[in-house]
Amino acid sequence: MKASNSDGRWSDEVTTLLITIRPLFWQTTWFLALLTLALIAGTVLYIRHHTKRLLLEKDKLERIVHERTERIEEQNYKMRQQAETLREINADLTRKSEVVEGQKLELEDQLQGLQFGADDYISKPFNLDILKAKVHNAIETRRKIRSLFTSQSEIPEVSVNSESLDDKFLAKAYDVLEKYYSNPDFSVEMFSDNMFVTRSLLYKKLKALVDLSPNDFITIYRLKKARPLILSKEMSVSEVAYSVGFNDPKYFSRVFKKFFKKTPSEYLE
Image 1 (cartoon, one colour):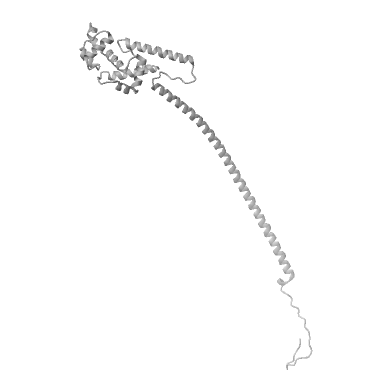
Image 2 (image 1 turned 180 degrees about the vertical axis):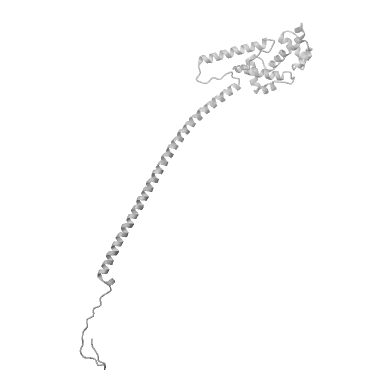
């Protein structure tokens, strides 16, 4: 350092002045060290906090997953139980369907057999003694019916409450003839239609029951209805013939004599 006077003259002596400039506190080493330590500590604390939060979220997610897994497993168990129940129900329905189908087929077989003129239907397995008894009763019943219808002068009565299929068939036949016997146009075709059977089945049933064809059955029924009219003497033979469905009085007299062994006139003597 040099100095000058007021005249501007500089001295020849040089003086050395030592000036020390200290750095600001934030530029000091200790501050930087503290700052570094603070940053490290803050980073460690942040990492620890973040890790703890992640662990809590992980635990929460694991609990949620566990709960949902348990619910799914419970639902799956219920669904398996329901599926098993449905399989059992389906198997039971299948068995019942097979039984019903078998019964349906058996009933259809019975109906078909009865429609073809069978008197009864026996399912397997059957008792041989019962079968023999049913056959014997059927034969005896038909023999009695045949004898009553062809030998008596009057139409034999048939119980409407009878369990016999033969009696029910004859009762139905009597009802139809009672309604139509006075109609001269009443034919075998009309007879079978009102009986709800075919002509061939009607022939088979009447032949088996009374040993008569449908035509003969109608004729004898008319003759038996004519007998009390003739005995009443209120109508002539011709009027009686027409009233019971005969178109020809002469033909009526011939068939009357053939059945009763006397002509209508002789029957009155």
